[in-house]
Length: 192
Image (cartoon, rainbow, N blue to C red; front, side, top):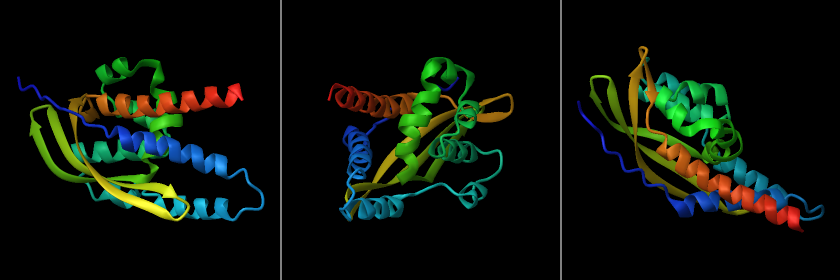
């Protein structure tokens, strides 16, 4: 039995920046006479990097890469049913009841400016490790977008004939950080 040790490095700075950017964009949109909200909206729309059907078709049907790209798109579009289906049974147990909240309110929206590109694949029996680069756009101001790249490896397991994300660490770490930032912002807003 081969055991994969996967160290997932989540850029805390990026996650906090995305959460703060989203908060700033939504708060700034409250002004009536300022052209800044329009510029912010246009910049955010320019920053979007959504997975397309073409991206999905570019991966081999039934492959681990196809499972990952479908999972990523489901997160971007906040499709909690598909996100859940693309996790292994054990991963769903580990995540528990937060799956819908993290998908819909936290990680899903933050990944709308991120696009995965596959670098390598290691398959051993019913397990696979998909290596990818995540191309990110981060809105820094109404007229500035920063581009960055993060490297990530996701482990999958073949379950009932389908590849599924088996290690939810990335989902829980990244989504959990954004969730905590969102809840803290909600508490501050409620206290005002």
